Length: 234
Image (cartoon, rainbow, N blue to C red; front, side):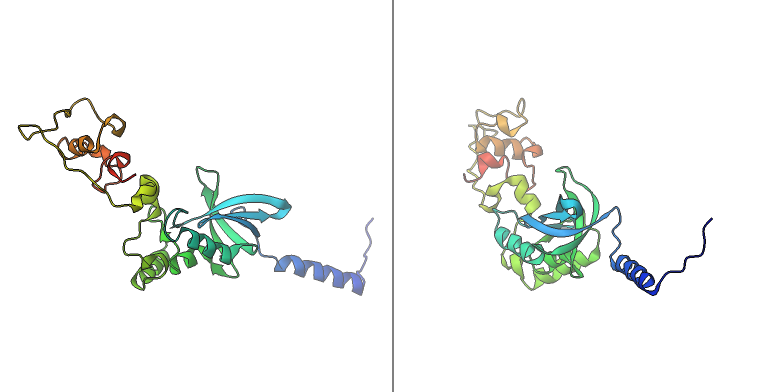
């Protein structure tokens, strides 16, 4: 049979301290992680070391920062590193991307790191995924004031850079199409039988298929230049 067993003053004080300790710890849900940043792979990807020494690679959502080979690529990576490396952060995750990274919103000392990268001109708003108007407003201000990457005359978004490779930063050089005697088409080109860049033997042929045959699939990024490997400077 249980009997009444009042707590001593010392025991009551210890219990109160224990409860206060747990109440003061931020609640971490299944979609939220807390930990220390132990690595910054690039300008929008970090590695989080959480409880149990578990490492998680996190891709900052809603933004897309310059690639390493792009102008401001190294500066953007340093900017992210300065904000988060070796610091305690909270990450609100949404899903896992195709590379196995957790897509997340990163908070450090009450500041939203994703948004700060846009405000300081170190990232674009990733228009394919971003829905928060605050990101678009921040980019507009950075662009207007030529902050960070917006100091460039014509910065190339990283999603376009990745599509076209490193040569996206080089001007296109297209040699004129040489037509046959009737001025209809190159002697070696026909509008039938070829549909892919790997089938083209020259830039002239690719341009003909794009302009004269209407084979727009050759211009994958819509910049008017077909088959980048053939028609851009090496």
